[in-house]
Amino acid sequence: MPVRKLLSFAFLFSIAVSALAGTEEAKTTAAPIIQDPLSKGVMDIEVLGGYFHSPITTGGAHRPQFDYAGADFRYGVVLSPMFFDHSPYLRGNFELLGDALADGVVKGAGNYLVGGSLLFRYNFIQPGSRFIPYIQLGGGGLHTDAAEDHTQRIIGSGFEFILEADLGARILLNDRWSLLFEGTFQHISNADTASRNVGVNALGGRIGLGLIF
Image (cartoon, rainbow, N blue to C red; front, side):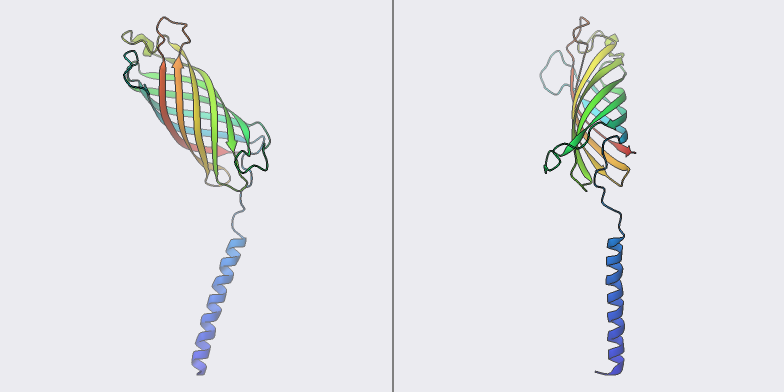
């Protein structure tokens, strides 16, 4: 083989080796895997927007359509250490969140719903995973002007109780920021403290950003 070809081959080989070495070095210096981003004592701020539709059943003469949309601001704290530490499905912990909500009525009686809830969440956390599903239950109260419309019976007082159940997921973008997705069932009523109390049963969803620190 001519010397020129040998030199060309050696040059190309050295470039390939350098590229492979650089790739391996990049792998070793990549950002570390986040093992448990939601460990006990971690704080959580969330801002979400959502839309809700009611009634979720059809044919109800006493349940006119009542759709609303708006925003939720939450502040939470992780309460517990990890449970079921060796389970591939149940490993996780509990989190308590305060939720302030402000919604506008899109279709139906009234114009607004404002209030707050306490939410109790269980995070399903696997070490190193950036996908964290969760379930949560909560309840609280809200104020609305829908009761001023006496042509409807679903909301009968200015103050109403709210109950909800959620299925959600957190997708970690890095060690602090995450995307949040939720599917939600909400029930709004005054627990028969007013003469009108057919109630609202709504399904909806939320999407938002979370910050853990």
